[in-house]
Amino acid sequence: MKKTKDPSKKRKKKGGRKKVLPKSKPRLRNKRIVFALNEPEYNALLSYCEKYNISNRSHLIRTVLMTTILKRFNKDYPTLFHEEEMH
Image (cartoon, rainbow, N blue to C red; front, top):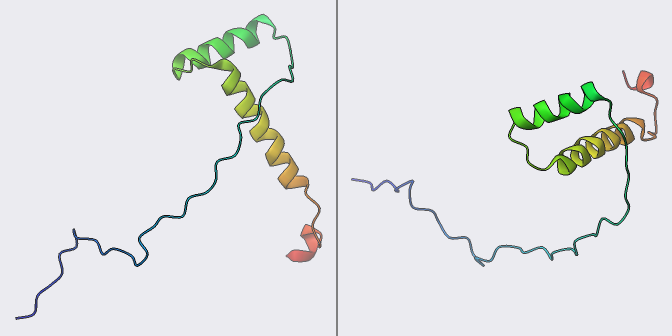
């Protein structure tokens, strides 16, 4: 009879070392931006944070803002061909 390998046992790779990337220095946030919200906007923000258990509003706002900005940059990035020419 032929023995079958146990799938729970994993083979070790030759070399066995995982590639480790050097850590980058944390960047200090020393540029301040202040903006104002009206009462309904502020209440909506508080309700959202309470509903989704968000304790750090600054992190939320920074993440949403930078995600929107980076998506727009990617969308507006110049390409070699116009989109109409690619279809």
